[in-house]
Picture (cartoon, each protein chain N blue to C red):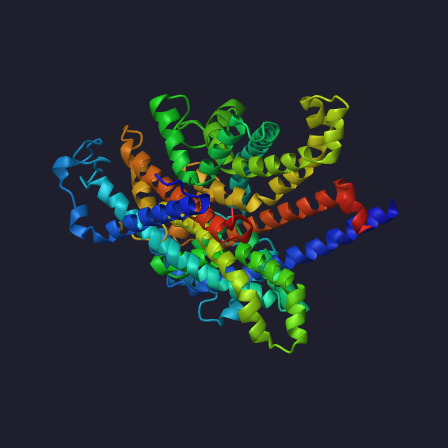
Length: 274
Length: 331
């Protein structure tokens, strides 16, 4: 077999991770709602070959519910972190324009968002929007932009002091030209990596908030809801509804985290050539 | 000396102003969010009473909530009440919100302080261990463990620990901060501690990877420095180097990091308290949100913000007071 160099191996690994995530997502969408409905004859069965994750107290197959839940988590994670990233880039760019008042105000805004514990802020926002799916999305999007905005601000400030930017300016290039040709090529990879690294946080928050009973309605197959149902049967010794869906969620988070790290290695010019 | 005192005072005032502005903003935002909600607090309040009420009582409640008044006036009324120390009456618990917060904060504080100390000590020691064994098997193994732990949701970890230690092994109680059926006055300190172990352990498991990885990074930087190389050349052993050069350089960043993690700590305690049915602020805020108990929700939001901001301020001041480099720079 031909020896592959590190970059090729990394690219293959990234493709495999991404493919696994896409598989999970599509599988969740492809499973029809009827497949989740179970029969009471098979209620509370431990894991077997027929039901890999066992069945819950209503006889629903937990594996299909978990896959559907993971797919839902991916949707929430994607939308919320994309919205967060858009907020982050707008706020980060605005902070780095160099106008002192705006910068101060944005720093204050970041302090404000970081000052309220995120769980409580999401509960408030979800309450304000009537505890629905949109409330959950808005809550997660509104709390996750801070660190990325700080990163972008720092990056832009550092880029603006570079000599090639100063030379462009002296050559009479407009602000928009500099933004498009000098700043964005640096920022887009950072933003992409930041987005992927924000994703696991968003998923974890989604699960936590659904676990508390906010956000998604109880008939939705979200991981948080499965876990909060499992609490009731825990003392009766039903371990599979608590352990297995949670482990699947952790697996998803670890996969996304890995994808983020791999993308960082590929996109970061310092490690890209290794 | 006088200059230092003056600096401390001015830093305190500056930070205090910032906290006040943040609290004011949080109160406005929280109030607007609650007003936006399609859920009617007065209706919820009356439903929560469970009994029919007279027209006068209803008007009294409506007056407190300022029904029919413009929102700005409503907010100012509420704010003046809050400033007088009147946070309203919780519709869920039928008691003044200030009392509930005061009582539940004590339980939450016990949980948060114990897990905060535990995660600080475990995290710092593991970080030192990883740093000293940098690049070896132990370091790589612990690093993996830390990364995996930081991807695990708090409540799931709590569920698994509850399952293993309470349901299967029967070592710890399944929930609550005291045994069931015992009057709150009769609960001994030992019993409280016994009920605290599992939630506190869960919460500290969530926050120690952060501090351990941070400490490891800093220690590796220190160990690669020239002065450590020189110390080695003088014949100092690993332990001496850690004690003389390592800990002095890495303790402060770790302590500051621990102080700035109050927001995550509070968020984590909301999850841990709900899993273990621990009667603290976290379980109260979830119940308040689910039962549309607006006064309690607003009260806890304000209180948690105050808690986090004070924590961050302490971190800033501590850093300035203890680290000689920052102190010199300020002066």
